[in-house]
Structures are given as structure tokens and as C-alpha cells.
Amino acid sequence: GAVVSQHPSRVICKSGTSVKIECRSLDFQATTMFWYRQFPKQSLMLMATSNEGSKATYEQGVEKDKFLINHASLTLSTLTVTSAHPEDSSFYICSASSIRGFGDTEAFFGQGTRLTVV
Amino acid sequence: KQEVTQIPAALSVPEGENLVLNCSFTDSAIYNLQWFRQDPGKGLTSLLLIQSSQREQTSGRLNASLDKSSGRSTLYIAASQPGDSATYLCAVIITGGGADGLTFGKGTHLIIQP
Image 1 (cartoon, each protein chain N blue to C red):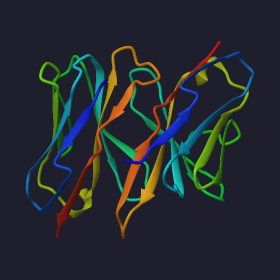
Image 2 (cartoon, one colour):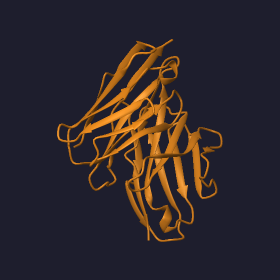
Image 3 (cartoon, rainbow over the protein chains, first blue to last red):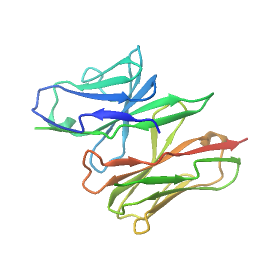
């Protein structure tokens, strides 16, 4: 199956700094990528939908100025957590969709990034 | 390495039927298990989350069960409707929840015929 590579898998940063997470589709073109966040003992929550060449669509309650998403090519989307604070510590995971055939899509997921802000 | 398998890969049934989707995982040391639905071109919608200490969760017409010892979960959909057509994903989180904490199955592509 198709592969989505997410990097880094784990990052620890100081409060106030920014962290960039990359999501790459390795063997297919992903016009749409999704970013999720998961806090301990909670379900995955969709943060934003990233569309290549256009602005991301953010879910309600997600600050677009804090979580900057760039989808500059069909194989790369990045999520930058700006001025990170301890409450941003979470598990972030991306997903990319490959459209195969009419109305048939399959989603592939990165392995996730564990962000710890100290 | 944790592997999650979902059976069947695809299913097409007339509306009104009751359905069972299956999910199995190879390592029983899981933290919790989640069922998601994904519509074409959309992100994930979380349906049910079952903690490792629980045996089932219910939400409306959906019921998910978990048997950790046998490495199985089922998603039961009652009185299926065309709006239930989507891909259903099962995912487990391993104990400790490290960077490789989330393991997803490949999904069951469900079509409910009107």
C-alpha cells in the first residue's frame, strides 16, 4: 500500500519555540492531507484539512495562527506549532488521501509525532 | 509489531440490514481501540472509543465490542441506512502510547444500497 512518512516521530521543545512537523506521501500524490491531534485518553480530533495550493481549513476551536499548515506540493504538508506551550503537548498525526477511481478514496496515515513542550 | 486487520475489505448490502464489521489485532497489549468512519475525500470521524478495561461502547445504532484477550473487536451497525456508506477504520493504541502508538487497519469500505 501507499506510504505516508511523518517526521519527526518524537520531539521535545522549550516553551515559546516553534516546531515543524512534516508529512510526506512517498509514492502517490495527495491533493488533500489531514492533521489530527490526540490528547491522552482521548480520541483523535481533526484539526485541519490541508489542500495543495490553497489555504487550510481549520476545525472549530483550532487556532490557525498557532497551527500553521502549508501544503506547497502534492507530496508534502507541514504543520508548524508556533510559540509552543505545555498545553500543546500531544500526539499529532497526519493522513493523506489518494483518489483512485471515481468516488473511491483511500486514506493513509503517518505514524504520528509525539510533541512534548517543557 | 502490532498489526491490525479488518474484514471484510468491502461490503455492499441493501438498507435495513444489520451489519458486523470485524477488526483483529496481533498484540493484546493495547491502551484503547477506536472505530472511525471516513467519507470520500474527508478526514476521520471518530465513532466509538473503547478503553482497554471496557468490553463495549454504544452510540445510537452503533455498538462496538472489545475482546482484548483474543485480539478482536466488532462494530455492529443496526438498521443500516444509505448515509452509513463510508469507509470504517479500526485503530489501536499500544500500551504506553509512544510515537508508534497508533496502528490502523486498512478499513472496510461499506456501501448501503437504497
